[in-house]
Length: 133
Image (cartoon, rainbow, N blue to C red; front, side, top):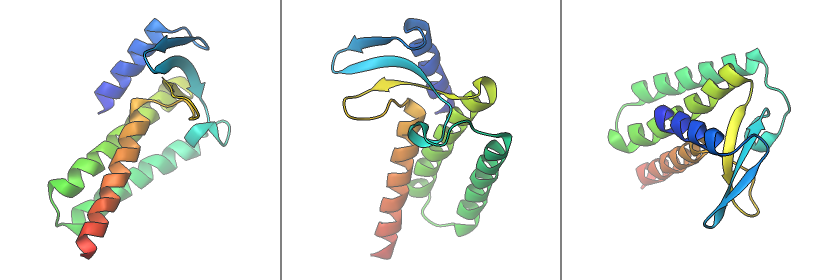
């Protein structure tokens, strides 16, 4: 996921200059830098935030490893979540902010790492609900 995320961000930034916007079918490609947390909230991100993110990701992996159980129904969504987080983290470390480029109507600009994180979380929640049954 990290390679796909970084590749699509590189492609988008090569096709669209920072701050510009190009229409492609039903969506817009827009090259923007998100220096905040989700949806640009929170302003500049500190080194402490990056450290906390890494610690949380490692903690999540340890939790899943010791939880055992569901096999690919847990590890696939976990890989999506972790891969997306690492893709955005790579941007933060390298550039000081995340490159967002997908601009849908009525929604903040985002990237494929964000999609991966959201899908991973939703699938993990579905697994938790399935386990309760």
